[in-house]
Image 1 (cartoon, helix red, strand yellow):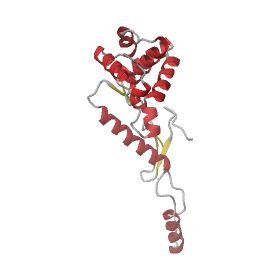
Image 2 (cartoon, helix red, strand yellow):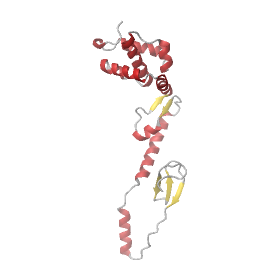
Image 3 (spheres, rainbow, N blue to C red):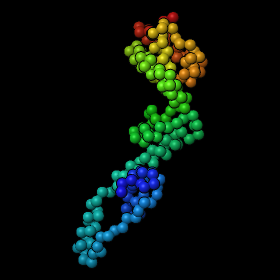
Length: 197
């Protein structure tokens, strides 16, 4: 049996405690019973101890469970008291890195709006424009980068930026952020200027 009958998670064999435990819910699934013979001869006992000594020092599943528990606790500590942040635990526990795994709730909402309104292709166009003309503009996070790409694509296609209210509503940004993004486009790389006054 490899999986927990209750939740389906992997099982961990804890030899020291003599139990088999679920890595997900912590239920003790079974007990480990040693049926090896009791040795009366001193040489046989020494051979048995040598065999035990040469087995792996740790159980790889147990090691992974402990590592994931530490990662989970680190993520919880990082977002504690910050209700506006959300952790993508699947991605974080897989990669073990905080990069692109902790997001602002407003950024998640902006990504949903982009998907719902079918703006993914125009965002990709805007990102490629920014990469070609001034990659330093991509040093923003989440919704700011999406909004900037949208504004850049609209500028190149239509010759003028999209209305402030539209960008604010789609990307959950403030009026001040919108103006800063426009300023960033105006002041970006003079030789490859995206936005000309």
